[in-house]
Amino acid sequence: MKADQTLDCMGIYCPTPIIKTTTKIKDLKTGEILEVVSDDKRIRLDMPDWCRTTGHEFLGIEEQGEEIKVYIRKSHN
Image (cartoon, rainbow, N blue to C red; front, side, top):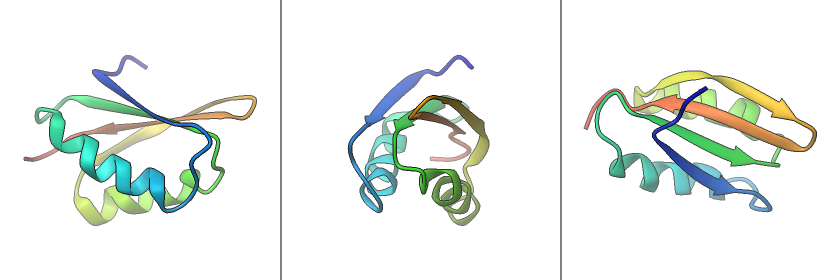
């Protein structure tokens, strides 16, 4: 999936990837896609929950080995 910006959270564990995502999403324009790259397996559950709570659109997950990529579309300012 093509992302407008990437947030590297490799080696960082819960809850820090969510905290960093909350900060980073503010830099995007409505409709842009943020790719969050992590090796924290909890991100598979935490990020969809965060999207439901904040109103941003959860687009999916791609996994390659230990690397987990999560995609979020910013839905509001």
